[in-house]
Image (cartoon, rainbow, N blue to C red):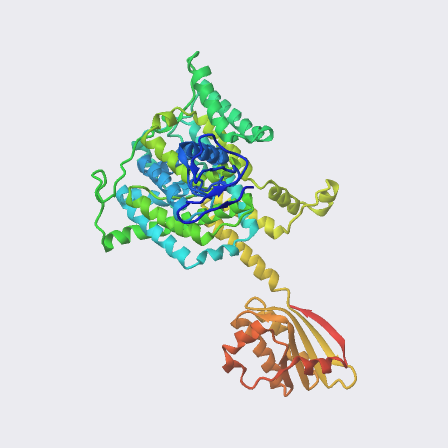
Length: 632
């Protein structure tokens, strides 16, 4: 590695290394020499022209550009591939909402670029998703598409506030089985969504009238499969589409085992496009569906909604707010859930932690700006993020370039996008769903449902607690059958109930009586004292039993923890129960956190005796365990 030194004017800059050029510039009679490794930036960085030295001449500029391109080829090709696969997904979201697909495409490129610049998780792709379309569908049906922009702006402001308040930390309350179940459910949803490309695309008028749905509508994930108003492709067209999907899936699955020089999804896209147009359409009359058959990518208008002649913006007043705020809350909740869970999934894929508050702020800013310029908003896309990461697109550069390529396609090269076979998109997305599934979790759930005798017979030793398996399966069912937000909320609630139920059985009370004089008794309490254990803790000390205890009672709380007011009330009730019997009672060995909580309600503990640990130890030295262990 060469060494370099410089000053503010670069007058005496000298770099010593292994590589030089014949036409390098000469300064102070010395030829500038460069080290290739020294000024190649990190993957995804854009500072290759200024680190560690400034550019010297055209040849140096070209060399650095080439080096940067080779270093980031996975980011570039991965972004190029995702841009193709994201267009049908964004269009699907627009068709579900019943709005012009141009709104979805506008949001998609804007959100990718803005989240990469303002704040986003590296490697996470954003844009319009079907879940956002679901949240907007009823608004469009009731009031029209012109109100969409206000609803998205409101949702964006809420997301910014959420991130600035640091509420992303609440994601730690989402248990891992919920994330597993959500990942598996999203894989099922992605696969089900691909079947819509096997149907003849209806016209835009039909979509605007029929596709709108309620925010929560059971079975909508597969409604397009049973819809009688749209017909399936028939004969050779459907067979060729399936063949493209199969070839693309195999390329994505097996090519990385041979080489990772070029992303497998990009290769699948190119191969299927060439097969369709060179070996199927040219020599024969057969053909399969391409993106143009599903929707023609058109150029949207890039100007603020208030000056766009194609949009009639309603007045900014309280009446407009009453119409849009509920749908803004729906976009806020749905978009935030999908974005934060996408962040969690990408964290697990890359084993690098992303900033959830920063993601929320980035998504909010992107939604506000995209709505201002005529978009319909969006969120983090789990499917596209998985495709990007498995194409080695793991940096913000990949996200930025995805938006740039989508921008290029819709404003300059939409003809190139329109010729891509939908079968290739289907195969890549199915591969992404295949990689998204947590196969081990499904095996663990199966093991949890089988009895021990069968598990031993088939040597299945990966069982998880049945409660965790139930949580994962419940999240999968609710997400696929109802809605993303309901699936997430149900999983968290079930997990919280299971935890509270399990914790409510973990309070143990041991009774120790002085063996010599039997003049004192010590109750050693272990476990959490909170609302779920409060009643059971009190029941451990019935009057008909404790009235025969010695006159001196010590309640030792060394292994206990008080968590809420219910726990304090239960402890005080037990204390008063002993005191009412004329016994001398004392509390001892209270933990620092419990003590701080009790100090906030000091009035409750007036007249209560507290002992230091040394006094209790002297008493316990002459004591022995002579009674039961009690559990709540």
